[in-house]
Amino acid sequence: MSGELLDWRTKGFWQPDPVPTGDFLAARPGLFDGAFTWPLLVARKSAMEHNVRAMADFCAAHGLAFAPHAKTHMAPSLLRAQLAAGAWALTAATASQVLALRNLGATRVVVAGQLLDRRVLEWLAREREAGFEVIFQVDSVVGVRAAAGLPLPVLVELGHPGGRTGCRSQDELLAVAAAVEADPALRLAGVAGYEGTQPDAEGVSGFLDDLRAAVHALSRAGLLGPEVLVATGGSAWFDLVAARLGAGARWPVGHRVTTVLRSGAYLSHDEGFYRERTPFNRVAGELRPALTLWAQVLSAPEPGLAILGAGKRDVSFDEGLPIPRDGRLTVTKVNDHHLFLADPGGLLRPGDLVELGISHPCTAFDKWRAIPVVDDDGTVTDVLRTHF
Image (tube, rainbow, N blue to C red):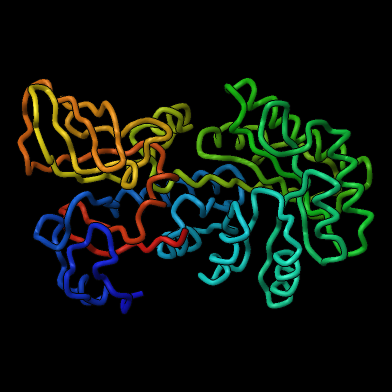
């Protein structure tokens, strides 16, 4: 990575003459010393390090195996940090992400969804022989048939009416599990589900109870082996996952159950969507926002209005607009390359820089292929490379 070039293709880095990343970092550039141009997404090192430790500690305290969702950032250095902190596996959403994680050195991946492409599944079977373990979900007999005859572990997925994927009833889940059991090569590794599509804490708790009940039903049907995985959890309700499925949960006798938490957005957190929804608003703990977007004022064309040179290609906007760090300012609208800022005090002039917090990190990282990492004093210490 240190030899990878920073050049005209690297958005936000002002490098008319190509420079290897290692040489760039050796100069210890500052955020405002001319090495960058605007807009620029920046990651704060101390916040990310804190968040990695906070979630690792939470999982250890509640008896959860952690498989952080790599789709949030797809950055090798952050994946290494999560694994070094004790992550049991990484989670992926798509076959392409699985392939990327394999090439980035992952050895165990949980796929939070169904894989239906036979070419992909045959590749997984071959890679398994080389020590690469992938566990994916099925929620239909069609999904089971897609993987028929391949020595792969699968999780049957429970959903709920109005939710996303997953069997809509326990009977349907048992039928899919029976289809897995009937295949001579496939192995039923456990159950999976996603609680985040429930509307509130009561709905989440009920769904997690249904997930636990599904494990008991599969056990009574003789469809589970001695080792069972239960994979669930996003970044909004992991406290309830711990309470309902963590240490102390009642599982059927004769099985060793491992509950796998798959949160992803926690690593960078945010100042909008997840700030409002983090479980650490309800239980002890803290996550810190790590991402900010710096943008330049292009124009102040009328009283109370400033236009920033940043837009939908630069910052997330699907779960709330960016949040200015200066509370006297408000973002009102985002175009492709322009951001409208209410400035009632007339504080801003063309050329000024504005720091914006983000809402929803999963659609912030994917807009940048290189993201400078800064110390608290603004010195750039690393460059995150993302692989979406």
